[in-house]
Length: 117
Image (cartoon, rainbow, N blue to C red):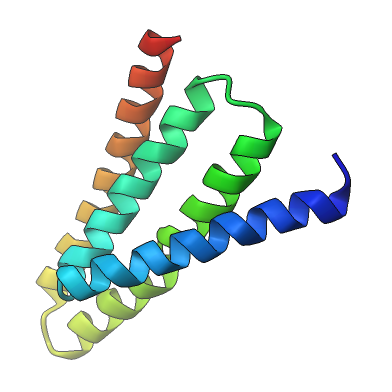
């Protein structure tokens, strides 16, 4: 695959992932949307790691879609703004909980993918 085609596939997936992230943000407010997108995106990424889907699908879905859908920047902003509102316990719980949810979702996705293949 040419580098240009690879970049195009990542861009297509990224556009879809960004639009899906925006839609989730409209449907679910605040910190909850960050947890949802990071857990769902990690699950999908884990699933794709375990299922032999090919390099084009990995570029479109894993790198492009999941890369744009999951949101480390929103995670960081929500954590900092919550802490700045004098809610350090909530900020810490959110940060740790989001990381745990994302890692568990990745492991579940990988596990399901391994069973399916």
